[in-house]
Amino acid sequence: MRKLIPDAAEPWIVLLVIVGVFLGSWALSIQDPGNDLIALNDREALTTLGIEGAFALLFVPWLWWRGWRMDMVTAPSGPLDVPRGIVLWFLAYLAIGIVFGVVSMFEKSLVEPAVKVQLSNVVMIAVSILNAVFEELLWLAYGVTALTRRIGLRRACIASVALRTSVHAYEGPLAVLGVLPIGIVFTAYFARTRRVWPVIVAHALQDAFAFVYLRGLGEQR
Image 1: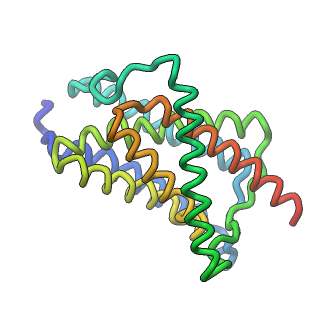
Image 2 (image 1 turned 180 degrees about the vertical axis):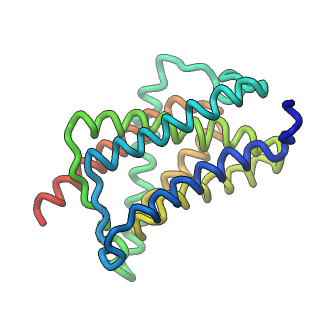
Image 3 (image 1 turned 135 degrees about the vertical axis):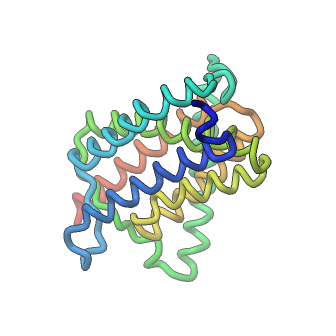
């Protein structure tokens, strides 16, 4: 039964199904094609968490049945993961700043926020943490590890960054400019250390600060 789906096809099925569902759900949710501003409210955020939870319930038991275990995809957590995550978040933030600074020299409109955040504090915290856990376990712990077995580490990292970025492409140039350097920094760190937990900490911090900034910006409009 396990060999009905070849090992070589497994990671592509998992990753591309998730990318396809998220992009498809976004396309179906468009109500005003002429409006470039995307609103992120509690309902939208909780819907996203619900989709991620459904994927976890679907794929985690299946991957466990196929032989995957947590110690195969990441080093165990440790007391230094939080400070490591804070440093990693700072490096990712620095990378974003450099990218935005260079791009704004040529085209300022590309760095104008296309997302209006209207999240309550509780939902904001939940999304920052749970989304970080889901994405980093998917794109790094499982994605990079599984793809490395098939196409090598370098190509696996490139594929992981590309898929991660594609999921956020609908949010506009600002999202791409933000997610791409973050994805590169996080993926490079994981490829070097095989530690996903500091990345989760850094991702949660980045999401939380981004949400607070965008919410404040939206209140000023």
